[in-house]
Image 1 (cartoon, rainbow, N blue to C red):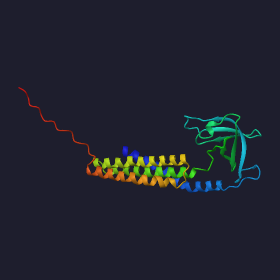
Image 2 (spheres, rainbow, N blue to C red):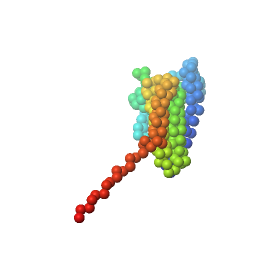
Image 3 (tube, rainbow, N blue to C red):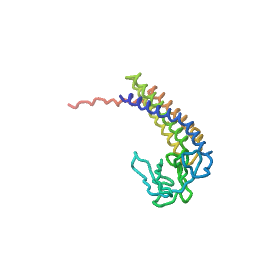
Length: 244
């Protein structure tokens, strides 16, 4: 049953990983389109590919911390009184400092606020912002695909080696090293986002680490097959002489 659960988990992870990988190219094209978009000559009356900076007044801001189903949101108001609701992926660096009646500048692109800038010049992408999505998709693909492949091998292996404890132990080594591969990809993505590194930094950093984890996986799996990881047999107890 445990092996079947690992196989199901692997299938889900691989599906998510492949979907993320397929979205990388589209995310790159959208980010390039945004970075190369010209400024609008006047406030657009409909969704447009040009960029327009519009002043808003903050009406309310909800951080929604501790609510997994709700993202941080803010309600911004145009000078005309029209409200715009904007969602964020995280609260830093601008959203967490928003106060009612504060003035902010929203960057409008294709009819949506994609970036907000406060009076101090700090910028933050909204949930509709295209910047950073290629890195997120690539990091997700690396994490899910690497973990999924290892979990699939480690889940299927025991099904064909029932009763052989050494093979079961080797499969366990493969599975848990797969967790390490996925976790390392997530940590690499976090470091890239925190330091604003370019897209190529993800495979450049994660690749060598993945090679080391794969080498460790191979060593542990071979050790398990040789019996190096077998549990030591219990010490034999000598019978005590009877005192008559």
